[in-house]
Length: 144
Image (cartoon, rainbow, N blue to C red; front, top):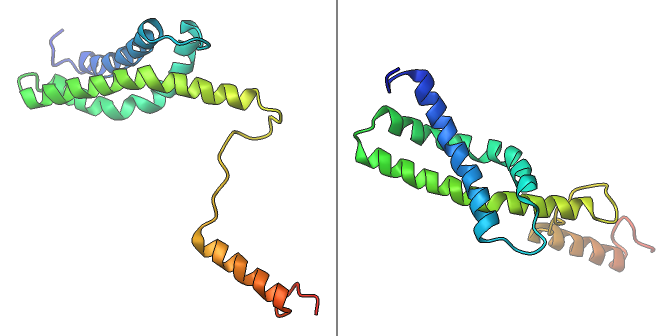
């Protein structure tokens, strides 16, 4: 097989970033472990769906670098993307695991922990005007 074989190039373009992502998980667990974090096996399991969302958008740069191995700007951008993938592997699975643990261990398991929407200025001004109308006896809920 030559380096221009599309199967080899595709395998490398997708294999290297995923390997980098899971290497980031191992680096985080071994070098920057904190008390109460998940075991390495569980972090790797949580990392599977997170990696499927994170890694594929970055593979196009690596695939281009593999098809043009002499272009140094493409190779340097490939290394930068690989670094981004490793950093994502170090941070995202831990954050996802923490969010999922909070969701599972809440008192009511009805919905995920999404922060409540803050009212926009337009809504709050409209609500204040409606309250004023009701209090003045001009609104639909007035007691006049």
